[in-house]
Image (tube, rainbow over all chains, first blue to last red):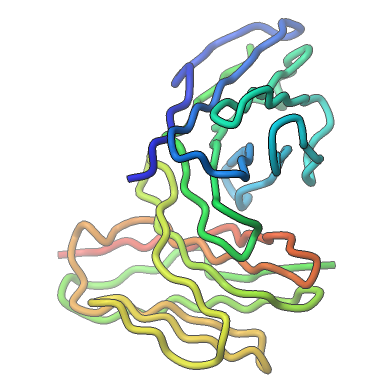
Length: 113
Length: 109
């Protein structure tokens, strides 16, 4: 299995508070992704990174920001959490672009009250 | 717009064969993936098709017809552990990966 960890695995927070989720990989893969998964929806891309300090928006990026200062770490920040951001968040990595297999972390279950 | 359609839920019997269909309408095509996701877990890679035809991998096979915008995942000799959701995803001509909502497969003894 690809070495991908996410922290925290579970978090409950209140509306309006900032939240940061961390994804850490030991595979030295160039691409990293943040998705959210909600019932009835497919995986929806929030942001992705194609290298250190190189990031771009996905289809549901509003309310989220990311940073990648090292190859192995990709951080997702909710600046001011809202109840609509209650979801399961998955990090994924791949060696190259979207023609390549993505390997997923175990997920973070976030609840915003 | 871009769209991937999969049945929401399917039920099959242990030991039988099941076919999960995926149809897509995307801006071009650069490959199709199938992933398996057990409840409460992360998706894991099953197969990748970029050319027409059938790719076989043990009990699982995946078929692609680019002209029809159609793929299926065939699972043989079903086992209880195959109960999971199966996600279809397509890479379009802009190298965006479009995900289907997934098919929940329930296996009954």
